[in-house]
Length: 120
Image 1 (cartoon, rainbow, N blue to C red):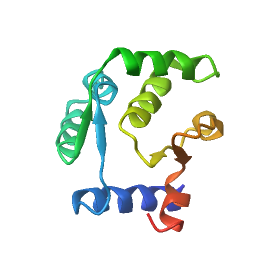
Image 2 (cartoon, one colour):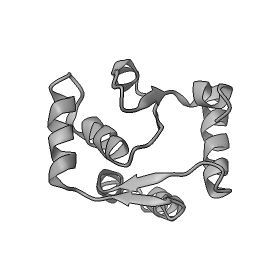
Image 3 (cartoon, rainbow, N blue to C red):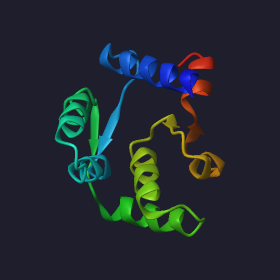
Image 4 (cartoon, one colour):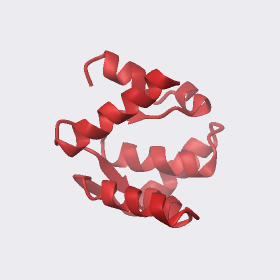
C-alpha cells in the first residue's frame, strides 16, 4: 500500500508540473460535491483546477456509460471510464480491481504503480 501511495503522489506532482495531463469531468465534480468532509472536498476542488480538459455530460457519454455498464461495471465507474474514453485519454489510472479487469480497446486501464513503472 505504501508503494501505491507513493505512485499516486508522484502522478499528482507530475500533473501539477504539467508533465501529465489530467482530464476532469462532471462525474468527478458530482462525487466530490457529495464528499461530507469539507477540507477534503476543498483539496480535491483545488487539485482539479490543474485539469487540462473537462468532460461534461452528453448523449454520447451517456451511451458509452450504458455500454460499459452492460459489461458489469458499476454506474459511477462506468461514467468515469466513459468520460476518459470520450476525452480520448491514453490511460485510465485506478486502484479498483473490478475496473482494472475491464478491457476496452479505446483506453488502457492501469494501476498507479504500473503507470509509474512504464514511465508515466
